[in-house]
Image 1 (spheres, rainbow, N blue to C red):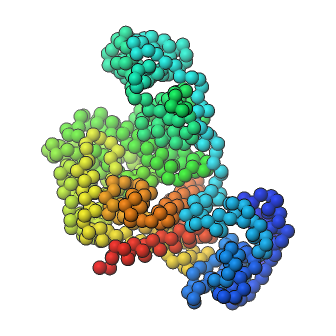
Image 2: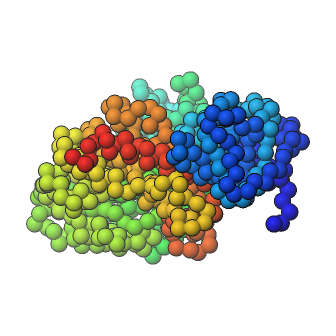
Image 3: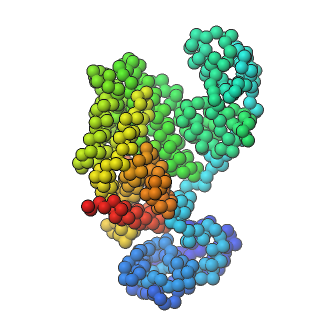
Length: 601
């Protein structure tokens, strides 16, 4: 066995890596090395409580209670903290493989509990431990430019004009001040921008002597000065604007432009949005996937929450899709009836991070039933352009080119799936009930009503619950560094079970929520989930989604095909421990749901 520096090893793992120097020196001065043969019993229920915290360097132990194995611990994982915190011996600990462990005496351990981060690692609730875990992953800490209050980006106070100011006069004011917008003193106040001059004055054939109130926008969409930049991105993308007045204590103190944001975060979504808006032809679609991947990598390295990243990616994909719809209409002529382009799957839930298979469909008003060829050609163009942009075709064929029809046909489909829940109907419903309109003018309220009405379909709900419970994480006892269960599929074993069960809970609650976390929150508000389950499943989902994203970015950088399957040995000790924690929590939640929904009835 090679020589190992115990102090250096301990300093490199969580939570010891974050200890202040003075506290860590207390550990280093008292650290012991222990060697224990296979079969050694280190702890006994009802016996003397353990006098050390053990950190495993080599080998494995298993923990029992009442003869039942609860956990198997391996390299980098710790045990003994329950006994040290409670002062009681409530578990049996056995050495499974010859063990090399670093031991920290009880008095030093209790000294370290004065550090809140250290104490939280061992004593915090599972949801808090999962929440903190990605912060200890090998990514950088949160970058200041992402968290910077937008008020710091302002270059000067706002410029105002009177309501009677003409377009020509406003343009001269903007030119003299070197700005691209002015605020208008109306009640409520408004804003006029250089884009308004191009799109509403010149394109509209208006003269320069018209008042700005003919072409301005109000009420103002504002953002508070203390809002961090990464939240402002969402505001810009959702509102599809390029100017945001900034307020402090209700007063406008300046106007932020998308260019200001772009200067401060060159790898943020505003830069990608600019590239989408600048697309001139289908020939330039090829770089979109690369730009999104680079942005995602930069944001994750900056410490941005994976769910926030997914929301930004979805908004950029929506902007691209609207561009593609515009091109298709330009090619084929005006639509013969109003339509709605819908996305489902992770894109429908706004939880997609890297670009994956297409999942979309097309709904059009009933008066379009005699023009199916137009909508078929329209769907084929858009699906083809999405593929050029980096969205592969769906292997299951769930794409608009195959799934399109009138609103009446779609309402009949949705109703049929809930009224006659065959296995195929449950499969399709679990896909399409994540739908989200991303383009077009057709109102989909009839479909929304069917989704809400599913709360009154007990047979459908029971069978949907049974279907959602088919995907289960592997038992913790099988998750080992070596052997048949040394690899896990984060999507199939963790992400998909949460998504499926959250969808089922939200339907019972009569919620229109689409995102997984919003569905969990709706279930909790309806009394279907307690607060602890909500917190634990929310953080388990965030943790698994973020871990999968980080691993897939590594695969992308290495030129490897993307997969959700990872080797446990490739994870840090804290990540392995939290994967086991998350999987265990998901199985417990599924067991409780199986009883609640009577899935065996």
